[in-house]
Image (cartoon, rainbow, N blue to C red; front, side, top):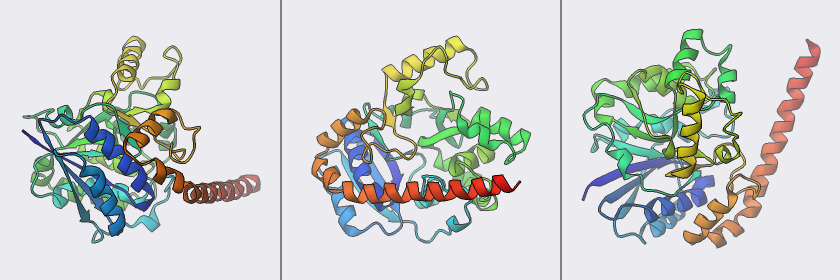
Length: 325
């Protein structure tokens, strides 16, 4: 039996999502392995920790532990584009120091459900000298358009070619420690708060390329990919050699999903209009979280209204600035 360590990082607004994600992960876990799960957090209340312990306690081959990251200075107030993510993304880059007992480790976001086992990813690249492995950007992304004016042409080329999704990663902690890469990642984060769009992903690509490795795209299949038309979707030609190859990658990932990811602000626990909502709801029911999901709807509605109010405010400010030019 191998020990598979995997960590998550999130705030109190994502406890329901974490319960569903973790249950779906363990539901599909290989019983031959022991899954050691960790939550890196800042002030996650004991009641939430107990709730997640109860979820994991149903599985004899899994444990969960909580590690406080409050000592890290994230500098979040200086971040230019906070979008829909939180300061917890920073802690994805602290694992080498946070987990000295491991030489390699998996990471996963919690706005996901799992439909396959994560263990094979842990055993990838056993003798390779790399820092991170993750799913590359197969498709053209709206994020790329935001890079213009923020990054140099050379940096943009690096991001297009090497950026990986931080929603699921394999971290080679031994190599990160050996080369002092955590300090470099943290310095890059703090020095570029004014221009980062997807903070941890861009820091990893800019600091660690070319010593990044690809994981099979099945480990991060975004829910909206099911709406793609394989004949018209734009592929990232810096990663995908041809349209024919891209169509095959898309077909393979939709057929053989390990992690189904729900990026963006419209999470399935907030709106039933989220793509692949029924799949998440079924996982929620399997995890025994249906009542919690229902009881939290007033809270999520309040968060949603605040977000849209902020969007309207920002939109008005941008329009005023634009009209003055």
